[in-house]
Length: 287
Length: 155
Image 1 (tube, each protein chain N blue to C red):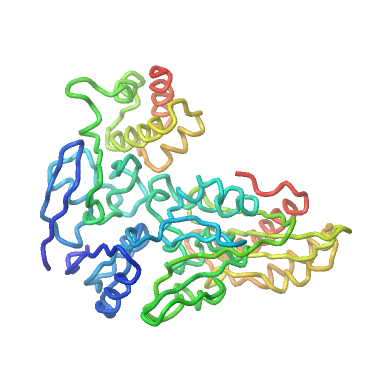
Image 2 (tube, rainbow over the protein chains, first blue to last red; image 1 turned 30 degrees about the vertical axis):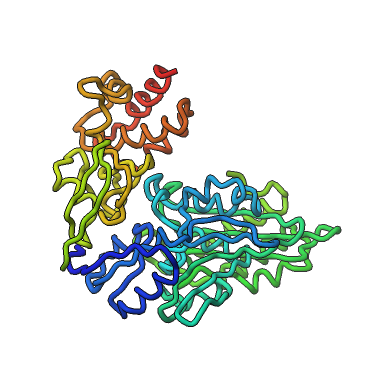
């Protein structure tokens, strides 16, 4: 399957990885967990650059932000006390649904994002968390919002940049969070997934809101119009109904072997409602 | 295509093999005679190719052999001590948890990784550990019982 690969590199630093990537031109590919790349079996690959030894496996606090190295595995995320405690544990919860035990021991956070799948389970909570990604290339490093990282179906930020880090900025005070996933089984690919973040004022009105969805558009998305509709309102039955109607208008699901567009659209309503109800009830996201 | 060398430990023995840079770990292990590592779906779904890499279960069909450089690999061939079976292997036999046997190495390795980390797991934790290994004889109940029994026996 990969019989045309001419060399396999395991750089010890990001700088070395970037040099190899540059030298390999369009025939070099970065590999970490391999759980998507190997299945994809792209026969144009001549050089593989394994970045799992490039010092990108870490979870750290930097000021008020939480930073996660790109090669941190799903298993590490789901078991990390820091990630389990962050935002009701929505990222840990999502990581824990990213495939079987074996897959989660291999698959990495950076890979889940860089693969560009609209169904990436970790992208949805990261969108709700206003996450940013740090990209490195020959010219240096730059930080962009995760929303800008995705440019289309399976398309991510252009050029020979390497995703090296995910940054989760300081969270709104008293934020409440939820992650919801609908799949054939707990660890199967998402038919639809949703994440929500909610901050309430002293009168119980939404002061700040985030609604993110996966597997219902060419990229993971935020339902920004639904968020706007929610802010300033009491989270009651009529608000929820309106917000969920708006979500259903904002998504662009497709029909495929796993589910029809109509079903996915309806499930967007259901999952966002569940997520916002969980946030409003303050029960948070349970692992 | 250029050949390269990979050095690793398999079942406690130091190995140095000549591989192609694009070789997958599954293919190399089978080429070297570890036939307990099964070739199933080759897409990370069925789990039959599971080995423990530094104690953690992974799908060897999704890992390049070059990535195992310096690692400790455990296959089903290394689980027994000589002619003495591992308690999990005994339990699988005692509970009739082996049907066609194709998924059994992966079931036992996944269970071993769980028990090494958590000697007294709940039934739910056992089910979670076995969920990445498909048994198409449809026999999940007995493997779960066997793992729980092995955990109890070790107590």
